[in-house]
Length: 611
Image 1 (tube, rainbow, N blue to C red):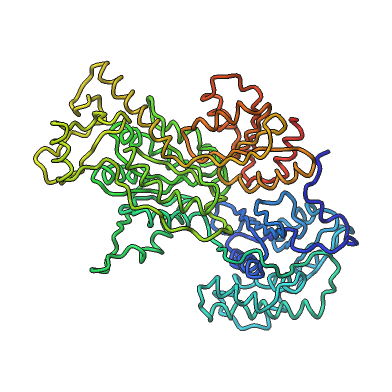
Image 2: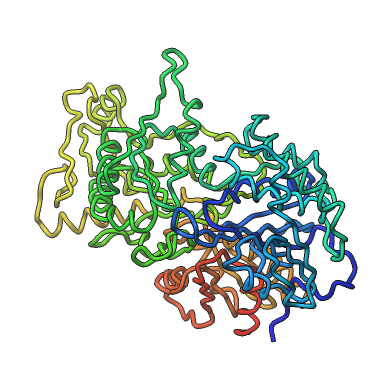
């Protein structure tokens, strides 16, 4: 039997559990519960308690079940918990299951109006009269249904110790300082709080207490961080088509366009175009990147499928642009509101023929911001598309983070020749050919349309060509061109974000863990759990493809390596095996792929099973 690494709710007689438990809120999609849940998260954050939230919502607009889990962790863990001790059961369709899933010693909060009864004797029930409380407030009909969920916020505040002034400040945070909507919601919270105070007797061990573990930190979604990084990276053209879960990347670019206004004219320096589909969007990027713009889009797996052919054109014609893939569960339409890392192989080898794309793998919202601006420099330096693979969990949930650092270097346009530098190039070399490797790094020199020089023009070709950009079907020209492109990807390895390696133990005494992306918080947590069991670990987090030598060295140094990822096929494990010529049978794939964010408990159980 697996060891529970979070053995909190064993009985209601146990000692007090402070700032180390999770609650799950079950409601119907479209009922306004997201606002209520974020008020709880923001309140805990204001109390200085490390907190994280995971939204599990259906792909329809309204009516189907939705769950939101909120985890408080005095130790600063922010991965999803496999178990939640408290169930706010406000959806009658799922209440029986929500209550059944509670551990012994858990807590259930549900509407008294249901007259539900108590099916378990080993959990604590708190019933709150929704209709009675809501009858005491005057709220416009259009808002009443959505504000009803504030009833459970008031009950949670009383039962578990969230001060009311903190809840009000959290409401102001949620409504961007607008007092009228904040007060309208607060009135319901206050009534529910007072009713709970007068009628509910605390009978569980769980409580929140103020800490000082969030000072200097921020709360932000990954998609907003990605948008800000793109704006700070100098993006000038955004072409996109809405698709869950990437839409809010471009929404947030639009929300923050004031950061990129021309100081003289006051006009935006970023053009945002909603295309008719993803195929049109990637076509616009290809044209914009060719014309010298810093161009980007945001999409998900089905959109990437439509972008494959234009990506091959940009790869071979050596045109830079940036694509955010906020991944969801496939194949096909799949589960569009569930998270996954299932696009990794597809992205890395996107398009037909011999291609190998650069893929960046942010593991935090801070890295979403950083890779958001670094990706443009990289795309222009290597003259190729750059993909950034985030996921629904990282992109659409609130995360705690240290504040972001302003880019520490000027924009790098790579080997782009203007009129003056092109004249200097001719003076030095006596020639200029677009696809010739002058520096033995695989990267040619380019001009952009409109360069004011009589010899600046060249033919951009997706067909066979030689180093002079002249059409060619000669086999030797084809091979020479692909060899040069392959060489520039070796150059790219020197510019990619390096893997993060934490290896305090001798490889002979420790197991190796390899992972990437949003799995990182769960891996960090499980390492502590394994250490407590006397199991030493070393950890490497991959941050980019193609893989660099440090990754291969890490695999070969350890006697046993576990590759942890959130897809069904173990795609990073497959890429590692393709890149490592030596025997890699000691490398074990731990592929989850259950459509939910990774948990430390799942990793712990799989390692114990495979040890």
